[in-house]
Length: 240
Image 1 (cartoon, helix red, strand yellow):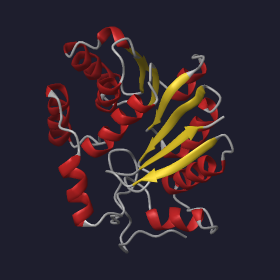
Image 2 (spheres, one colour):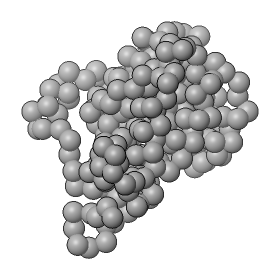
Image 3 (cartoon, helix red, strand yellow):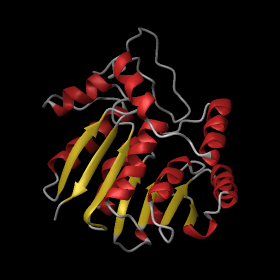
């Protein structure tokens, strides 16, 4: 059974998960990543300030830089996000996409999505973004492929199911990116144990993440690497 580092029941964070006290990065590595991460533009600085003020979880600059690079490397013209909050991750994709590139944002919290619509419109992105309130799992079923990039950043227990819904909708050469694979409401040691052949974790978030990483690692049409930036990203490229 996966246990938290404390004898007390772990406290749930804003996403309904546990912030296990495990950091996969050394302080020096973290400093290198932050020192080389791209700077926020004006919109993103405002978004980051809002996140700090309200304790809202966002991917952060180092992971954001990866999202921007993935958009550029895949020549992304069409992106779909599972769980968009108020559009911070979308802002990074948009920075790496051509001027006619389009992105679909999904979010169950209507207030968050409305804030994202306001912010992205103010930055001149209104005609490039589709805002879909409600269940992302239901929303994606209404969209045909191909997508160039898909971001999975919603309920961890549903990550593997989300991948199954989009694996055929991502074009060859495109990518699926998943956030929080190393931190953020999961027990990394329990996830690692499962990846090394041990039992699945008992808490829903950690079990969902272990299931997801095993699924993409073993998917024959995809190549997956884990990147230890911010809360950890899994980058899965479709090769066939």
